[in-house]
Image (cartoon, rainbow, N blue to C red; front, top):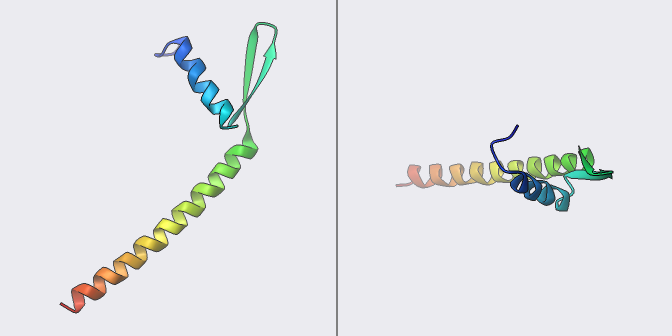
Length: 72
């Protein structure tokens, strides 16, 4: 049902497992994957902090550029 190969899907899932974004449970010959919501929340919190940090820096840069423009 996917446009990519099974090995490619397995590789993607492996990376998500290593990043602890998904959990995997073996059931006989099957592998059941679930989203690790705690890790996703941690990632979301980090992304929010980074967004706020960069917004602050860009706002400060805007102020500096505005000051330079007014003084020239």
